[in-house]
Length: 100
Ligand SMILES: Cc1cc2nc3c(=O)[nH]c(=O)nc-3n(C[C@H](O)[C@H](O)[C@H](O)COP(=O)(O)OP(=O)(O)OC[C@H]3O[C@@H](n4cnc5c(N)ncnc54)[C@H](O)[C@@H]3O)c2cc1C
Image (cartoon, rainbow, N blue to C red; front, side):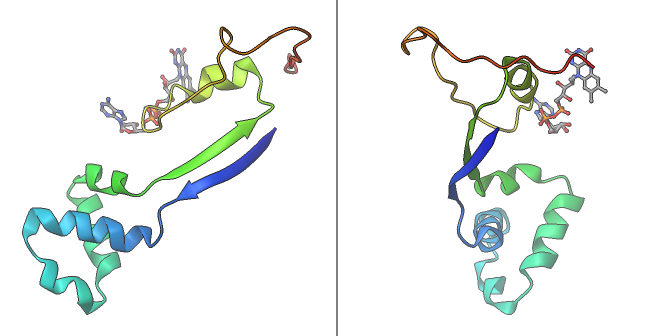
């Protein structure tokens, strides 16, 4: 299986802080080097959706259908899978996972 990083948020912590400070109208505090403390406060208070402003996009190749079946259950990600309708599947490769 091959995992390729396509894109990732630059300065993810600063981005989260910047988005989160919208809620508190506390942008002036942003330059005081307390980003980590602010993010810890968000997590502790359950304000978790703010963390979703940071993202990473990966392309995964060579995974089995058993693998994709499991991974898509994780609801915090968005998925785009190769189509079995629009991609020519003549002579396709397939993976048989170990049974043990
Ligand atoms: C030991 C084990 C046995 C399992 N057995 C089965 C089984 O028999 N049948 C089956 O169908 N599945 C089974 N699963 C899969 C399981 O039900 C979950 O689908 C899977 O673990 C991914 O969901 P998650 O909540 O852990 O993670 P994610 O979907 O990645 O979510 C991460 C966390 O974000 C929060 N979250 C995300 N979306 C929501 C939401 N909409 N509402 C509220 N909170 C949210 C929750 O805190 C969640 O724990 C099993 C998993 C394990 C680990």
